[in-house]
Image (cartoon, rainbow, N blue to C red; front, side, top):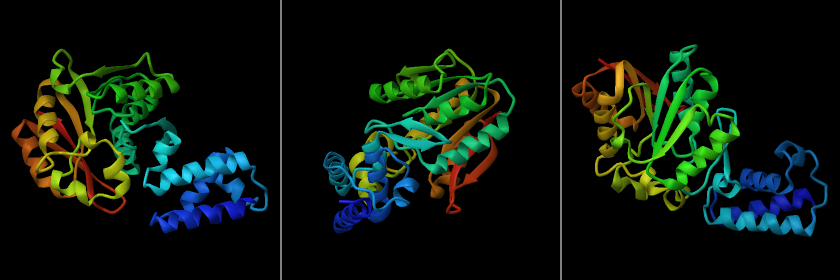
Length: 279
């Protein structure tokens, strides 16, 4: 079997299982199997594939056919031009979150700040920020021990272990520090709406990183309330939120002594993030 035949085999299998991006996914899975770039395999379609590699490819296809995200199959996901290790205990980094990182780097460019990342997961946000803010330090917190282990691995990969401290605890148990920036991508999906998510997400990504309670605001409220005590005056709080939550979140922020900053829209022009400042 050659490369073209393998891609067609994979595409047909995934199409039968109603995987929407069946051609792209087949190409990506074969690329990973052969340890070659997708571009390289697509320009060498007549190259033969060893039986051992084809069996590995089939194993990947079976996992993807069950809706397992490619990021979990590969154990990594690109974010902010870096490769982050991920697993089923960490939310998969999204391109929309890169927009938040980009905005925060513009705000704090050249400054020496202290950052708290609440619900750090893979550590993609704080690692990306500290990679570009060379004099800054940070703390990442998560209640998941498995997520913290993954975040530590990513920090080590990018030589940031001396500037990031990771804690396996609730952010509500942080008392003794004042931060310049608190950033969080908290669970903000309404509990009853989780069933409407794609199979990739609702079957595989950690529910605790998705479920925001009945109104989607449970953790957002707690993060805002806690932040007013551990942020410095004029410190920034940056949150990912749902598009329809902007009015409620803005009111919660105002009620907790925050002044309005800016909102960030995603690639579909929906509000995705809000930045506010402690008065």
